[in-house]
Image (cartoon, rainbow, N blue to C red; front, side):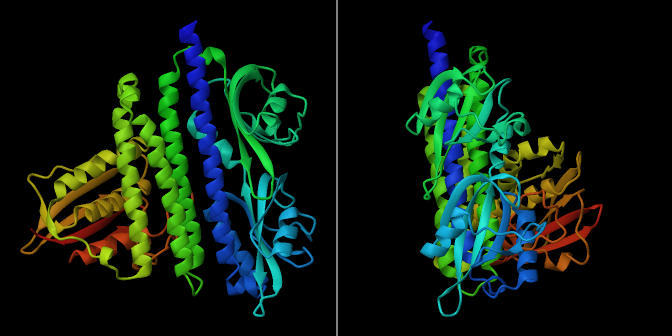
Length: 505
């Protein structure tokens, strides 16, 4: 009995950690939306109400960042004049709380959890004032966060059979449901035992009760609250028999990876969206400072989450996770360095921008990079070929070189074919070590090849592939700062080869 109770208690505690990660990610998406709308409000095409150009920009943003159900601009009477999504007809949002609050308070404002009028999707909307030259309110720019990202969150987690992930509003209306979402979203269950328990639970808790489908589960839940006072609740429920079927180890593994994946997804999404907008406005510095601050926060949270899994007691119970925990710790540290370096690039030449020059064995750098990216290779059945005959010594900064080859090799994997190959080789001349990273992927067109190192450039790339458009720019900048050079040759449909030349040690 004691072991059974411990299993239930552990499952609910892990479930609570999971919904907390979901809530934290939601908060960070909202803060990212605040910064995005602030930046958008400064763009001339939005300030001047250039409807066609504005709609084109917002539609491009929507294609690249599916977190948002829609982005748009409305006149003072609420008529929508610019929308990332095509409008079926005249649309007015004057009755929406986020529009009214943004217009009245001249500040970022949140609305209520709702089913969108334009999108038809469960969302939470936000507005921000657009001021004219005299500082008077001219328009309101708005964004709708698509709550269906929570379903992807649950999908990534690979919930056990008959487990559920649900988001309801304070009235018991289902906003998100995994699995079988379409059968539930939009329906209200105010009298359901789960709804009553969650709504009256004081914001966060654990309970054993019947779910919306009548099945008894072990539930953990927490609030999703925004400044407007709107409240929704995220809950996860595990069937008791699944918990007892010794699924604990798989659950632990998924908890680690889901938390990390979700927060890194935020990092990439927030970084990409804001830099795409910031490059179009004159005064970037204040936004860039805030962006880096916001991106550092999730990395700090990852450290906090990992600290639990690095505890000796946990590793004694789950020794098979030691390698995973170490891998995530190293990846997080690399992300922190990347964020800082992007900030330094944005601010120009600074003391931290100059790489060190020391003897580095490239063989060690590349082998550790291949190990780090092994999971990506496995997903696409990619073979990485690297067999240097001896140590490959260059003059450079080991940490910066790691960034270079992670970017190059990860790109070679992301844009490769299923079952493709990555071939890494070295050549030397009197002064330089030339390292080629070649793939058998989709290639780059001759039209796009000259632009490939341009910041934010992703033209011709598959929008389903995550990226910021900054990776190759960083590669080129770093290699040149270390006294080297980068070349690229490519043929569409056959593959791409990047060649770095670094000073020989």
